[in-house]
Image (cartoon, rainbow, N blue to C red; front, top):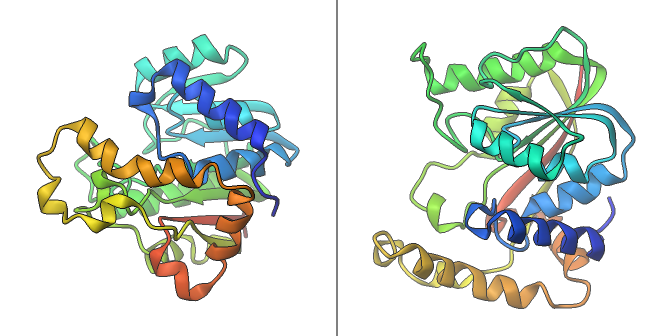
Length: 254
């Protein structure tokens, strides 16, 4: 697996600054920078990004047809403004509007229902059931041998520090019997300043204070030569996995 290219990283960060850094989906060493670089090196015919947000991941991937699915028309409208070539669908991830065996690869980047966000299900389904159904539905639409790329949210981010986090065992329970896991990578065990401050002191802090606690060390790290290689190398040490902010899965349909 290649390290992140500096040009891809800078281009992606610049896009977020244009769209609005308040909507930024992570810190400056987020695993999705790595995911974009990873997808850039793949030749994918049809790629579906579930909960695609503004479409930045799709835009960075090398695919003949990139499809973004999201429930928010606001995000999809901005996606169309910045990336007119992408095809967008407004729909819920509870009901994927695709034919059986019609998609080559699917991205679930920080978009697992009940864990990365709460679903507004009009069926009032249990979140656990909804998550399992999503993996089954993705399996349905993937072509034989199709790939599923999963990332989990930043476990150290202040927004998620008091929330239940998705564990490795839970992801494995979802994919069991449906997918063969080619690789699991923990991502980024480097410490951030926010970890040194009790969350109770930050819970009611203004947003700019929360960002201040989270970003300084990350900004510092991003200027270190070879930082992406270092993160990838550190992330492969099993002893550091429990300190990693994200998990990254490469799965293949059985």
